[in-house]
Amino acid sequence: MRAYVAVDIGASSGRLMLANIENQHFKLKEVHRFKNGFRAEDGHDRWDVDHLVKEILVGLEKIKRMHIRDVRLGIDTWAVDYVLVGNNGQKLCDPVSYRDKRTENAVKVLTSELPREYIYEKTGIQFQNFNTLYQLFTEDREKLAQTDRIMMMPDYLGYVLTGNAVTEVTNASTTQMLNLREGLFDKDLLHKVNVYQNQFPRLVESGTVLGNISHKWHLKYDIPETEVITVATHDTASAVLGTPGKGENWAFLSSGTWSLLGAELNTPENGLAAFKENYTNEWGAYGTYRFLKNIMGLWMAQCIKHEYHDKYSFAQLADLAVKEAPFQQFIDVNDDRFINPKNMLQALQDYCREHQQKIPQTPGEVMMAIYSNLSLFYANELQKLAQILGHPIETLNIVGGGSNVALMNQLTSTLSGVQVIAGPSEATAIGNILVQMITTNQLPNIEAGRQLIAKSFNLKIYQPESNHYAKTLKAYQAYLAESS
Ligand code: LRH
Figure 1 (cartoon, rainbow, N blue to C red):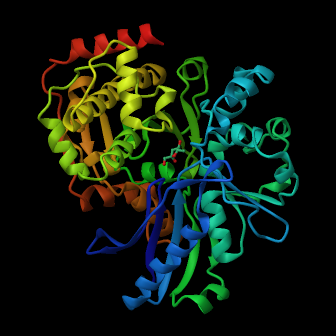
Figure 2 (figure 1 turned 60 degrees about the horizontal axis):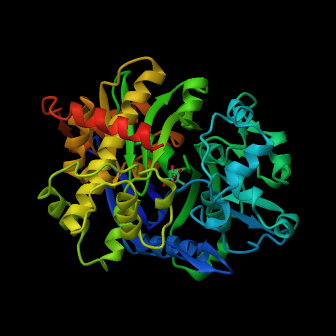
Figure 3 (figure 1 turned 90 degrees about the vertical axis):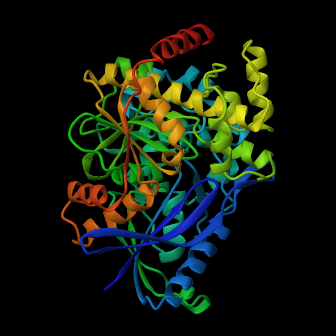
């Protein structure tokens, strides 16, 4: 039998996870973990993609040493970033990170030439400076002219490994360049940013067999026979697939570097209310849409942990936070200054100073400020989500690393009055593997996959603790309205 492997690469780390179904339970094991991050080079923050390819192969070597000879493998990464490939099949340069400053004003400039309503009506995608549309808008024109192929990050990794090039839709939709109605790249938007349809490899759905890892890699690395399957290559798409949501009225919160809060829909929702609230309709696997809002997420905590020289683990930071009182200050966590500040702690404290909010000082105070304000933001967005969709949200499924932070799960449940189901923390790798299993007929469909997940993982349930924060949420909403 073949083993299933998920390669799940986020902004700060990547890993290879080995999975299988044993005694009707989904089993998952981490076999390799490596660091990721961007660094300054040639005036931009860039990803080291050769490092990512190498680490995938090193992980596969470990798997072979476990006497596994036959592997199926899917790759997911963060969205929006792309690699420019020349006509010799090689990358022209290392890709620029979406957090790079080059797109700082790009939405403003581009939408002064093409109206927002026009772009949203076509794409249903939220306006974020870092979307591929704006990255290409600010891209080096000379480089673009030399570009044979524009490849999204996970598609590029699959291409380097197999030699086969595709553009997978869940990730491609985050470019803000796909036309919702036509199901293809939108010609007007491509034209606006000086690229051509034929620079993108053919669009494919999640669950397409890409091909085997090329012979040349077998010469360099002692790896198993490996067939690559193009899964839901956008990590958030995989995370939503790996969320054990039940019934009709559940929402998800994929809580990692970003917090992505929303609902899975069968038809996109790109009406006026969604436009005004800047909700997005990213394409999902199996004809679904991820209707969601991007929230700054644990990125803030990750940066601060780093700035404390990694003296504390995340668990220790959470323990310090619990000792502090919540809601000592209101912070709009989606303020642009937090996207890529030189120093996150400084940015947070400056924000509080400028907005006459209490300045958090100790690690516990700082972490509590982040956790309580993320929870407030989630509760506020849950209300908006219910309003836009026109039905109440009964359950919020929190998945990803952030689902381990009990404090935030409880605060979110109490603030929103919604039951929270936390886990699994590895939803992204799980969603990646579920698509591989469906593609290879090990599972009939995603519903069966979600049922399997619900019974295989220990999910934690949080109920609202009376309504003693109802006033706090109202005050926070008033604060946001006033300060925007
Ligand atoms: C999360 C994520 C998110 C995108 C962002 C760029 O990792 O993919 O869905 O908006 O990164």
